[in-house]
Picture 1 (cartoon, one colour):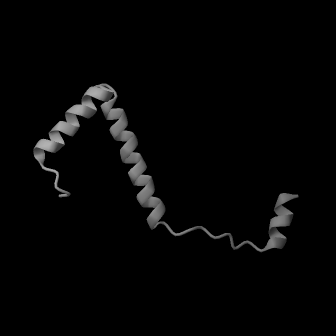
Picture 2: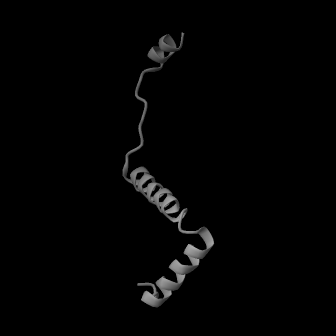
Length: 62
């Protein structure tokens, strides 16, 4: 796995814990999880195309 073993992961986790603190760690994890979820959703979701004829758009705007 990218040449990173258990000892390296533990060191990274301890450094993150020291930098951000135990209270902010769940907050950061939740934000990261939401970001990944939204990114995956955006990449798999087809783009929405507006197929409303232009004459109908003009009537709705007025």
